[in-house]
Length: 116
Image (cartoon, rainbow, N blue to C red; front, side):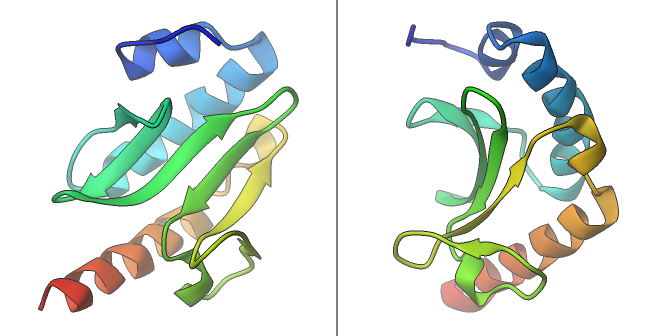
């Protein structure tokens, strides 16, 4: 996979179906997070300070929205490695803005608690 320098480059390089998912997803995350996404480990990632909170990584037929401390979040995320949990978005219709914003609020609260 080529190296990208911006989130826009990363998204533009995806197949149309995945770009459609990002078109629906990125504004939801950008509105809910205090800082814009940056590329971190090759995928768009949102942070709270220096701590990564969530990422949206493209695969061949879906985008994974993963939260670093997602196993501590309520609401139907699938457990991943360590404390992470994720949801696979297979189409733009899978982007539930209300649910994603709720996950982000919980994830940010966890980061605030751990910083205290």
